[in-house]
Amino acid sequence: MVLVSEECANILCCTVKSLRCHLNHPENRNLVLKKLQGRKVETTYTDKNGMKKSFIIGGLSKEGANVIPAYGKLAKPFNISVTAHFYARHRIRLLNPYLHCVIEQFQNKGVSYQENRYYPLELLELVKEEEKEKITNFSENIKFSSDNMQTSKTKSIIVADEEENFDEDMLKPSYYCNGW
Image 1: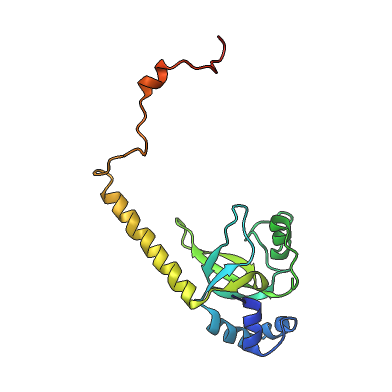
Image 2: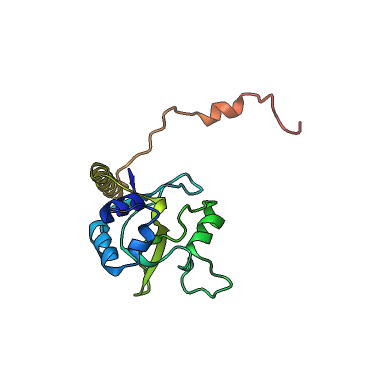
């Protein structure tokens, strides 16, 4: 898989170090956004459960990760930058902390406004098209199997691998009896 920062540098024909200067121009940022928006990406790091997060690119930030507040509209002493968040939460020190971020957009369930999450470009990988198809097929299989489970809940009978006879077990003496 290709890092998003490397892909952006290839699109703009520059190095990753000079990418920040190129992305400050709105025309270059729009060019990169047209090429990458709607593509699926995956994080290079894992969370505490060992899982990688994958999502669809919703946008590209106008500022670097060192300026963007990580926790939305939270007050200044309690809010930190995206760069500081990734160090505090994941112990990841960014190589290019001034680089722009990819935006994950999603709607809150009860509220009509958009809440954004920001991920530094260097911590994301583009998912290949073949893997994307596998992921969609896998999600369709999950939906199909969950539908089958809902319809067959009333018909299903639980069958144990080994039949246990609890009455016989109670009659056998236990040599590991507590207390007596």
